[in-house]
Figure 1 (cartoon, helix red, strand yellow):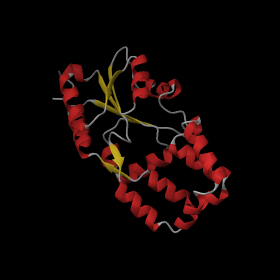
Figure 2 (cartoon, one colour):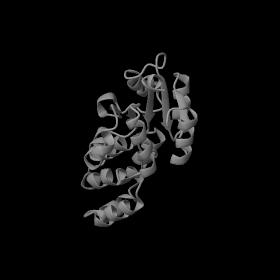
Figure 3 (cartoon, rainbow, N blue to C red):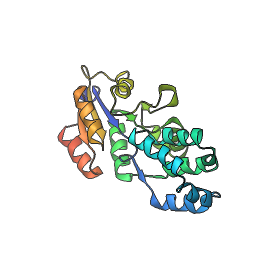
Figure 4 (cartoon, helix red, strand yellow):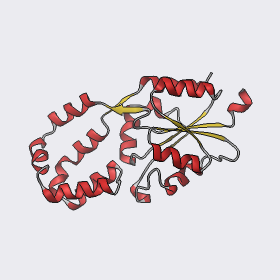
Length: 210
């Protein structure tokens, strides 16, 4: 078992797997926003709404969408920080964290592979350094690479720099079907994230988790 573990890598998505949205935090942030009236008024701005819907249609990652709104609509600038804070109003999934810790104790290589941007990664690192210490690599989107994101092949190429499916057993844990399908195409073993208990059972059945 010890030799086998040396050849295993488990890749985790972040939002929706390790973290989940905290509606309590979101409500507090919106209530405390000094520009909440401006934000409410912007909801009725047809040009801003068109930009937002176009970004959603083009599947922009959240940080890319926020930066696009800032670039095209100066009236959005004052609420940019609140928008970023709301996007990162996340709580730790404690049961998933336990699985991560158990794998780390077993010396399984762990990689985070997420569609969130570098600003969001920085925020989460500051809030939860103990979680990011468990990962040997953190792969995320960035303005430097035009926000390439899963399930694009270009995004997975960033992961394949750090893993070799031909020589390692690479387990890919994600909550999005298209991402899981792409991982399968590239020789990764896809494990859909439904809830932590199901993930734990699946990893135990695969003899990865004791």
